[in-house]
Image (cartoon, rainbow, N blue to C red; front, top):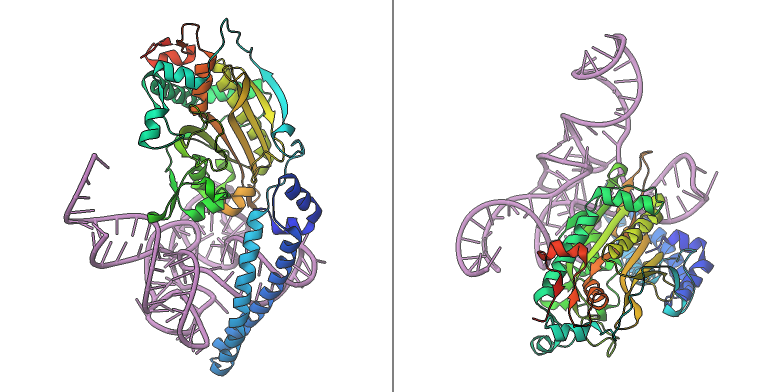
Length: 426
RNA sequence: GGUGGGGUGUCGGAGUGGUCUAUCGAGCUAGUCUUGAAAACUAGUAGAGGUGAUGAAUCUCUCGAGGGUUCGAAUCCCUCCCCCACCGCCA
């Protein structure tokens, strides 16, 4: 949610933002509602004052009269307030000056490319072919047991997932590594390590709303018996850890690395990426979530991207870093940067990591503040980003495949795979 | 799931319809005293919002959340959330 004062003062900028981000909210109507709402509020407050005075003086007759007037005004206000809230929630965050303006992913720009695209003496296979042949991805059985877009990950692939998690946890909880990565990226940021978290995977609707991630609802799994949503990312329950809190400046940055299963209905992507595990209803993900002072928010995102790159470099996976355009980015994002990893089977780069810099857009609704050293309180700035996910496994399978159908295990993962160097057919 | 107790400011904790503009204590900040500190004393010590110039001033709202009763609610009623204890069931 943006600051209404800021919207009032910069209506043209906000209207442009809505257009660029393909939002649907009517800003003129919002401003109109805002003004009416404030007028009405003043009237109500004046009556309240009168009511308080009457109560103090035990003037029952006058109190009764004031109350009658209040009732109809309050009804009017409730209607207006509901519309105001709905409109405010629909206004997207303003994009950064670095964000390309465009309708969709075609407007995204490549910031940099790293690693050599591997050359194969044979036609590289897609992950779902490899997974099936090696008996480590079983979507057929999952379809019978659960449905489409679910999978069993078996054998060495299951071990590989745990190895990736351990590797990434090791990187993000190691202050020395963070310091090295920051230095290499030319960043002067805190080297504070990430705190590992296993968060809940269910969340109350109102908290999801405050995260700005409830919409579109069709994308969320919902459990009516308990009025809970399943998270689409660990972000959803990591972000609210500090809701309604005022943090001390000395505590910042606060950095969490959360592991959770992510649940997505994938509404509107029927028929897209149907094979294998690229786009599934359920997958596991490591997610970074950080809170900083306003002035450190952008550098924090740069550190996060540098760490994502470091993870890909450690796994020797070729990738490109992409600046996401207004039409392709999330509504709460000020700036979104993706890391796309090369998938030889598909012969293209695919998104494996995303990094969302939200400024104070989420913290305003979540009411997370920082008390500065000068005594002032202000909203914290928030970042969240992928550290590793099911798609990391896909990238490893496709990039490390061999002519004989086996998969070499990346060196960094071998110790975490109990010394295994290869995935053979089960 | 059942029964009982509870949720009040930074913390502890009082308050069962109007004197609550929330008692008291601790903490914190500043000052007095002191070579310095402690103690003691004095003062201050929440957030959000409206009008207004982002000033002065002033008003409203907030005692877990939301509704209700009442001229008037921290206090009474309803629903929900959370915490604690015990019982039941269960990995």
